[in-house]
Image (cartoon, rainbow, N blue to C red; front, side):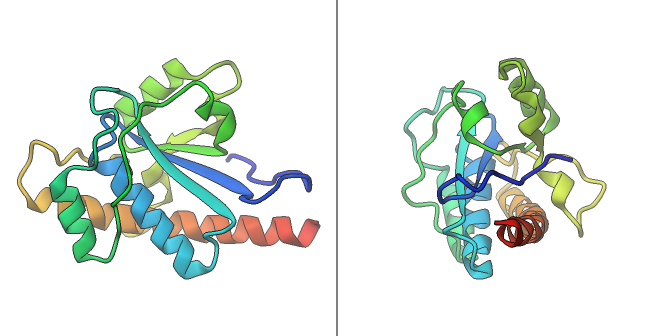
Length: 177
């Protein structure tokens, strides 16, 4: 497992998390919004930076898919202000954890990663509890409207598990400074 502890010199935020899907218009911006919300509720928002990106740059600068925005708002998640961007080389040194929505995007990230950058990569669903054993967040883009609800269910579960892990890690880091 990745070691989240940072040196005492690190300024806020203490940790940085990047959510990644293919186009950065459905799954990863939704994951960004869910994680931001859960961090806020846990009192960790100032300590953890969250962003999202895609392995494909064809939607660069676009807002999230309107269906993702609608479903997210229905559950209290704000996707406003998020704009699609492609993963950049500097992301591999900037972010402590880069979490892919599926195995294809994880493989693409591994191909993009500079030497030593792959240790930051994992699947977001590795943190799920209720959806344990499901390793990929399916892309709802071409599916039925209820696909966006299913994706949000999975993201809420996985982000909840991630916040639990971050809470422990940040608590340990605070105790050592």
